[in-house]
Length: 354
Image 1 (spheres, rainbow, N blue to C red):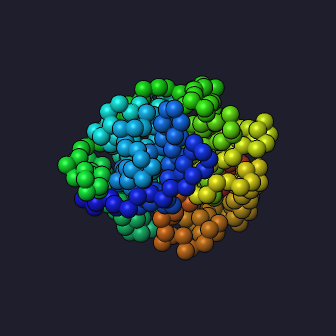
Image 2 (cartoon, helix red, strand yellow):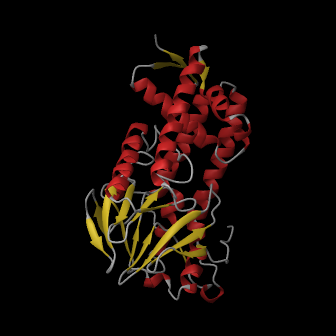
Image 3 (cartoon, rainbow, N blue to C red):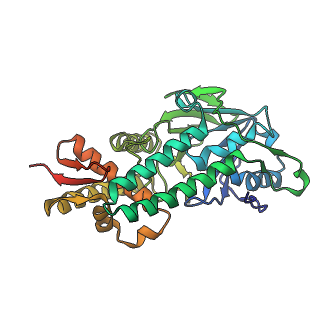
């Protein structure tokens, strides 16, 4: 098993009670975990399972241990936001975990949820690639990557702190929540007061905790430094995503000075502009798909190369780019503007409906 780094996550003080801890991880960009150090100590998200050592050491630099964390609040259950929390009980059993009210019911076994992700990655690659040899090579690489994660998740993981070498435990398979959060729910950590906004789209169970006394929105993966992935056939939906973005716009109008803190990237400096850019970019991508389909039938790979270029095929964002464009196509199909032909092997071609 690859050992997690012993280097503590980078700490940035956002306000007198709020800290941002940046955790490197093997998937995509580093994660931002937010520590609320009030009368109650709250973590918003926990990071990736292999980042738990970096998080523990960052807490130590702030004079805390994992046992001092009263609550972890999950914005959503993707692996880079929840899996360190699934290991948390082994080190700090008193820490409560909170999340969206249907989350634990819908994901009774987290490794099984990862199997669903693995299957969906294979599905979208099958949709995209007509060349079976290229398709199968991609699927094998993807399966190997998911298998490495599951192996690390199932194996023992250690904090990476030399003083805690004996603290070696396994992660929970089950998502255990002490509080089920719904739209409009409120709670306080002491001086700070929070309200929950349900914001599905990037993920079915995505929530955005809003701190209302000072003014912070912890936007998870809903609003980040670029366009988030939308997994239409898995746990996302583009129409819901657009509605959730509108909710963020409405929130900003109600609280003009509210600061927006994403789970990836720096603080969103101009939230209204950032939201409008995301929605405009999605519109541009949608129109680009329609223009390409006017030329004739296209498959997902051709449409992806037209939208993003071929260089993306060698990077970590290749599958997420396919998923995003598929989400746009499924939206257009639901609107009756685009149709598709699915072949016996799962490969799919898309065309304009006239």
